[in-house]
Image (cartoon, rainbow, N blue to C red; front, side):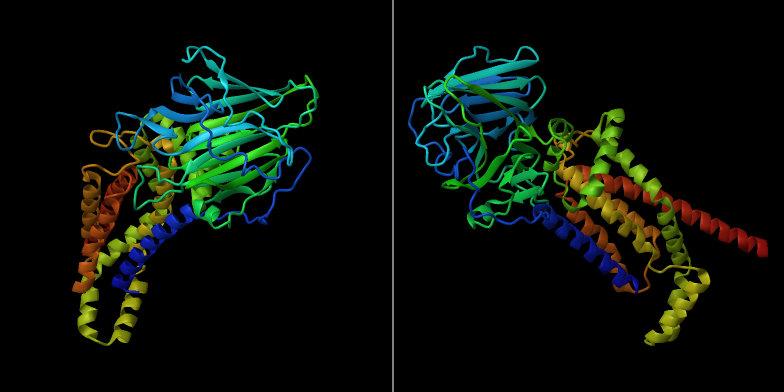
Length: 542
């Protein structure tokens, strides 16, 4: 294969990898399950919550209760004691970095969290739920210690529900406790639902060349991690587990997630559905059993509303960090992120962490890349002989190729050796690309000077320009193709790759720049050593 074809293949392979990687990230393979058309009816479990647990249509009076912690500014609505607004104080808004990120809201868009009680199927009861007026019974609205309890209470149809949200200092975890008491003179059989509702708006701040997943996700030990898109719900083609006694439900968007983690070991049904015009809902429903008059029961769950912090998520549930979806590169990306996290714990700057990681990767790949650069250096030394062969054989390609292959064997040269460095970089590049794209730790992480966010594109395109310059310098160190067309293609390559980098995260371009600089140093040293050895051999023969 000549240099022209090799270069074209490299560009094709790299571009194909990027397109396929993006497609895989958005359409990650899901464990197939048999789609149930109905949820199995069990004792005390409603057959469907779609008519009962939908978006609010009541005009009952309500009051907004604003709660502030060191990481949150939350707004609860006394109508249903639901969480209707969440600002993440320590995470900036993509469009206006002077403001906090708004994750939940029910005014500019619909993205809220609810829970409540519903009766068993065919039982005409209206227990406290998201359209029931609650009373705010606690007093503190600002976190001053390690925890803060936010308490609401409501009564309806013989059931008293006391809901306690426990907020934690420095944490996006919210513990939710529902104390359910039968205050009637007859037995009651309520079921508890946990729900997330959201419209289908696209979150701001995405990168057009690097799409990320926005949609629902369900986890169970039986079927593992399952994604469900808005389109699948619209087409009634969503496939996910319908009953489980473990796992969690969530809504995922770039860098952030909202998740309900019910008590493990309790049987529950799961439903995903359209709950109104352009509004969708995911719910779990759990039977609380039969309560005699005066009897009460307590149900606990955990709610996460915040960034995809892998360490904090895994502390709640070992599987919850799966919301940080690296797609088909997960097996490589997770160890890479752990290594980067360990390096960061020593270095304290994610940009320099990427630099050190690049050096480590370069050292690990040194034997292979060194062999490649030796081959390239030898190719450069025999370029005049190749040109002479071309002039000797003219258009006789068969004899020319035979003569060139004989020369390669004699000089122990691999003509495709120059392709190896780029081919080796592709899986590393794609893995780091996924890590930078999916890890919220990179969001807003500075390096130095003008690079204030490694997850965003370089605002002044300085790193992409440096990258193109280093690629041009690498080309100068390589053997010059005798064919003018091949030489032009070689010169176009830095422009092609550089143009691709203009909109990529700065952290990714930083990796490529550092890798190029290290490659130039390595290639220069190997070429110098080979030339020195050749000169020494000539002097010895003289």
